[in-house]
Length: 99
Length: 253
Image (cartoon, rainbow over all chains, first blue to last red; front, top):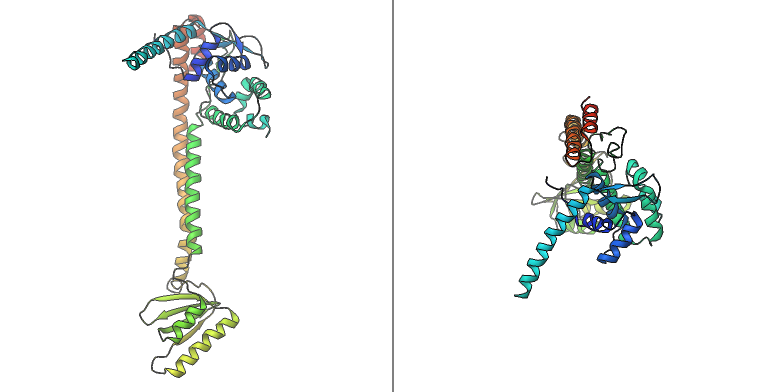
């Protein structure tokens, strides 16, 4: 089954959640650490809302400021597919730069 | 600048769902211009995609699927168009009202024209004098009380020195100073006043009609979009067949 398209910000969120559930602020800090990119709250929650809508991530527990999110099985599959596509692009780019 | 006020730009449902979490992030960060832009953009995005913050409770294990109301995207577009048109019409109208139909010249220049014998007649309405030149073109000058005497004095003097080509001086009671006005005054005033307004009203009416038709369509469409979505969730194993059937029944009722 085809996966839904994930935005670059969405991909960052998926990567961040790949090693375990995190709440919004932790996701933001993690993304800054791994990508050097500081996502504003508007961009971050735009991405989170879309991922939740696509059922790639889900929130754990009750309402509150520290509501953690975790990757769903569909989310893991989408992340794996996106990363595979990315690494193909990366490999092709490196190869072409080298020649 | 207060971060809470910026969050107020988001739809209510979005604030209920993500507001507390977003506030937590904002508390950790300095509110830079970049963040403000990010939030405003996010808020616009949230309004354009009302389905996003609608919690799919079924996926969380129970409850009902909330069908998002007819997309407000259409309403936003229509409102923008109407506002733009209003601005354009308003601007045109203001421009039309401000701009004299005839080129305006300073009083000194008008006096010069009279003394040089290039004027064939002058019509004075209120404080405004319309000069008709020998070549047929017209000029307008503003001549208030004392300067008006200057103008009439110049005319008298010119008529004395050059009786062969007198300048005709006419007074008209003040009213519409537009030179076209005396041709068809009521019709013209009516046209200028009501044409833009009636056009606008017509436009709004047409758009409103289209909108109400369009919204029904959107509502139906979103219902089926929702159905496609829960079918997708079932296919991916997020919803069980039984949960899917329950939601489907609820949606189609």
